[in-house]
Length: 100
Image (tube, rainbow, N blue to C red):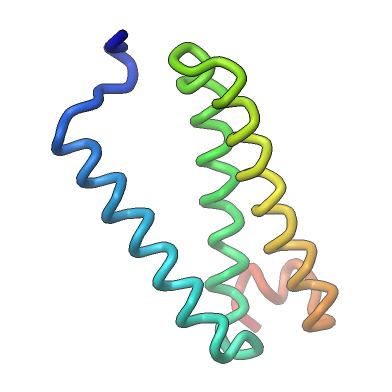
């Protein structure tokens, strides 16, 4: 069933696919020199939080339990990006937030 909150149009699917491809490419390129590009990956964590919240609010009405599982995975990825970078690079949260 179609929802008016989450339109499944060709344009929307194309935009979503391009956005996800772009963020994937950014993560791959950033991983080549993580010490210098850590703040990019750190901010990607916020995108993951946003995706998780979006899935919890809109996706729950559309796909139910699958949306909850995907949302939790996105939120966990966001936590992993942010907490993991702080520990691996031995930098503070604020250092990564402002790219110091």
